[in-house]
Length: 184
Image (cartoon, rainbow, N blue to C red):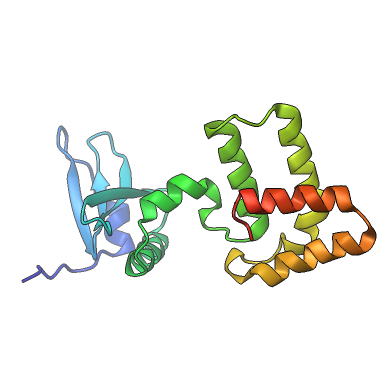
């Protein structure tokens, strides 16, 4: 039977003092806890079981910048991802800082940056052209949309617009890029 934990209060978080030579752990419930280091650092941590059944640990920042309420919201978001079968740690690694921002523009920029770092198979000049083409031809139309609202018909509308303008060279390049990156 799980142990019932009394939730923390912001006052407790603010007033807790470090113990010299020993880490102090204060549990809030549902895997969220505050780790108080002997140096005085107060860190929000979240312990969970990933979909592959392994125990994972993620951090939500320090208690000086992240309030208890914000840590609980992040904890709830993480639990929501877990209930959908996604591992929050993997999502954070793939998307990076854009994880909270699910607009197409942020996700596309994160994807291009990851491609630049991980697989430098594109030359720098080709990367610049791809970023420029994406910025001029696709982002004005799809950029502000949430990524989960973009489907084939939205991408097709952008491609049809390029075709109507007679911009066949760019149409071909954008089509190739969207197919290669599984955008559509």
